Each structure stands twice: as structure tokens, then as C-alpha cells.
Image (cartoon, rainbow, N blue to C red; front, top):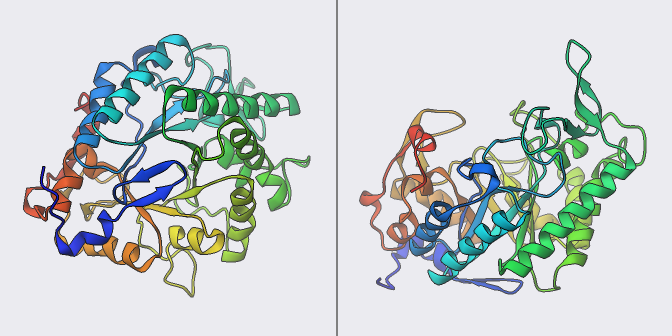
Length: 373
């Protein structure tokens, strides 16, 4: 492997220190649910899948969402668990494979909340969990309004998962607080109609996520990085917003930073779009400016013209990549997460580093239906 870095992308290949991690570059593998872990257990194919991206030069890999051990966390069959002897042994193999390739990897800790429906693993009798109750037309409870006891159980579950991640040798953890899953549904005013200590004002809606961060921070070492992924848009509403102004966003992110978040992962559909009127700053840029913490941008990176559920996209061009390079060079945000382009091409990072732009593989939506590679 050559150490050559093409001058046009040099800012992406500067090192970065994040807690105990010493990342060799600014490229992150975005978390992407693949549902390739039968009965919740990641196999050797999962280990090989992540190892190939580490071998391909990615600085930090964030796993697909992994289900914490709360009974209502799972909403996707064959998604990976982060509890139980078999699943944890599988994740240990993943860590060893990535570290053996010289990479860094963290799990994304996930509770799907109201996205879950009765009938799913591992206990089909368990409904979804959320800020408010949801029933179907026949009166069957699909989502349970969480009690204080339920909330305490979920907070403890996140903390156990984080401690387990450190014990397994992972390099940090990411808390999933985006996209209309559990933590995000408490945070979003449109999905949280509670009138108790966990609903109403922005600060009360933030309380569950804040308690999770505090519990995770207590459960791991001081230098063990804790990341948090958040979003404005939802699975059901691309125009949704948890914050209408930078000031409101600060009221969310600053307490989380004070509680122990080391970096914010700002999930957007297009990473470069301005987050608020009157400023060109992206959502990741605002996260960095408001908190002083490192920020990860994500959203259609490395794709030419792809967005949302488009069936496919061409690979990125050098001009496209400059839209990534320039804000990193300017310090708007610190890292860039790449998703679909890395599914198409495990060697994407090394090809970009060496300026082999014409060799980048284009993304095709059919990749999601294929076996891991």
C-alpha cells in the first residue's frame, strides 16, 4: 500500500484524536442496517464485511445499529443483538478482525422504540415502546406509553451495552438518537405529547436522551469516546425538525456535550445543505460551532446525484469530492461519514486517497439485497 495522498483530498487524510482513538484520517463508515445476522448473531461474514472496509483505508467504522438488551429494542428481524453470549462472541470476532486490519470500530447502540410491532423477535408478545400509546383500529396496543420504570430499564440497558462494548475491545460507542427511533421520538415535539417530566418543554423532551448519555458516560472509562447521532428529518417526515433555530439546537446539544458526548454525528439527507435560514452552515457545522466538540457530517457523500430512495447513483467525481474536502479543511466539521459508496466499494477510501477517482465503483440499490461483501 502506498502512502501517497492526492493533494486535492489531503485534508481528508489528516489524523484526528478522539478520546483514546488516534484516527489516521477523517473518513468514517456510516452505520447501515443490513439485517444479515440470523437470530441476532453476527457471523464470520459480518466480521469479514467490516474488515474489508478497514483494509480499504476507512479511519473509523461505525457498525450498523445493534439492539440493546431491553425487550422492546428490536424492530428488524436478523438485525444484530448486542447482548447474549453468541452475539457478543460474534462482535468480539468483528473487533478482532477490524483491529487486525489496523482499523478502529465502534458499535451503534440502538433502541427502535415505537418502530417495533408485536410479533417480532425475540418475544413476539412485546409491543413497541414510546412516549405515548399507539393502538390499531381494533384496539390492540402496538406501542406502549413508557412508565418511569420502563424508562429506568432502558437507561440501564444502554449503560450495560456501553460497558460491554468497552469490555469487548471496541474503540468507543455511538448512541442512536435519530430518525424517529426511541430517543428521537421523545425529543421530537410532534411525537411526544407527554405532560410529565419527559414531555412538554424542550428540556423535558431531552431528559431521556440526557439520562442515557449520563448513564453511558458513567459506565465507561473517561477516555472511551461516546458519540451521539441525531437528525432533524424522520423516517416518516423528511421536513421534520427538532430545532427551528440554532438557539434551540444549542439547548439540545450543549447539555448533551456537558453530560459526556465527545462527538456529534449529524445525520442529514445531503451533508452540505444549510441547516437554518440565514447561514450557509450545515447541521454538522452548527453542532461543532455550538458545542466545540468534533462533528461528523453524513448524507449522500461519495455519490453523484443520489438521494433518498433513488434506485442508484454514479460514483463520485473529483469535483463532487471537493464539496467534502473544503468544509473539512475550513474546520466546519471534522469527519465525513460515507455510506452507500462504501457498500459499493470497500476500497473507496484508499482510491480517494491515491486520486484513483476513475476506479471508484458506482452504487446500485440492488447492493442492499445482496449478501455482505
